[in-house]
Length: 433
Image (cartoon, rainbow, N blue to C red; front, side, top):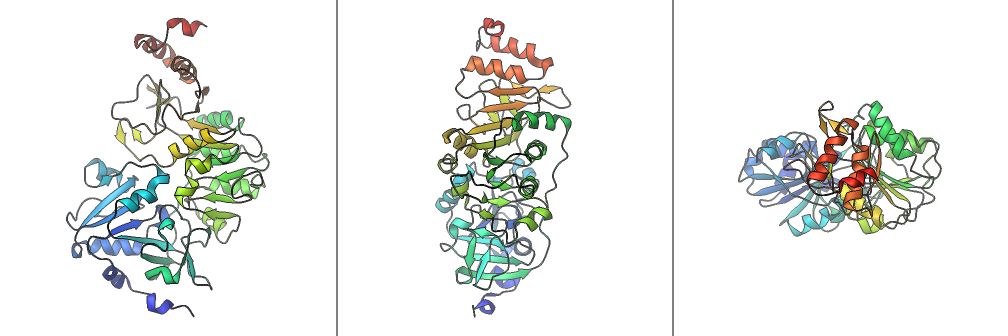
């Protein structure tokens, strides 16, 4: 028998385990232990100088809003609706990062790290699974204390996200549904962009896709493809459709052959049911899945991501909107770089040509003041709007400008050409060649 009863605790006992000056590492999305964090939020004044480190929080909490200065400080690495307003008001921190570097950043910048995470129930061998997660939490297994919130509804998954009871400092048991992220509706413009990308994806390609109308539309067009693979940071419901239709086998992959691999899953209950005890799906630490050097070993990798605007150099601002922070870098630049390393790798950055009901072009001479560059001009490959595909890799600045203007909304093209000439970036004769 494993010593489960000796480690099972009440929420109040869990709070007693957390010392002053602790650095609590909370996994992304459904790895967030709601019962423990809610109790912590209510009793924050009992602590001194505790820091909570997290990407993509699911729920608004008073400590995120800076209500307990001197007691708890919230440190974000990727904003969500639960933390965006607090950051923009200066009430919490945001640390720039490449997603694949998160384990090292946390290891180097924490004093008393403790991982507080949700897990699936323990199996007969004494192992919990981090379920929908591996992310930046699993690299700390066996190295720092783990406090678990064991949720009866967390799916049991495979990969390097397994933690033995002997490695757990304390745990509680809960039973509540996972948070669901519904897929947005697919617009006609999304379908136009998706068609342009899908026709450039061959059989045997390995996919990295994010979430949104365009990625969902692209996946919906791949059901007749053969031997697709998946190596992605975020596993979404669109992958389930392709797997069930037999389009995904993973047999052409160089790494994790035959397996769908990701670092976390976030979507609907259908997705969570799909990954539960599914041996074809494995979750690995983010410094493996998102390492550009690992991604680059996968021949025919196809990376598909979105952005808010692109400038004449090809720089993509994907974490700011109108010059104000909205999210963070995430894994976009990891996969953009990895695709450039890979044999036959392709990277696609997708966006609609306009914003604000057609009033503003998203292809711009310069990024909006205050914007952050997510994918650099050196890593960008294909930029796609509903008007076409601009192939930028290996192209000069003047040729990039020509290609980008060609996929801008027609009503902005003359204005963009005139601005390119005014800035001295192109000779006007370029556009007549």
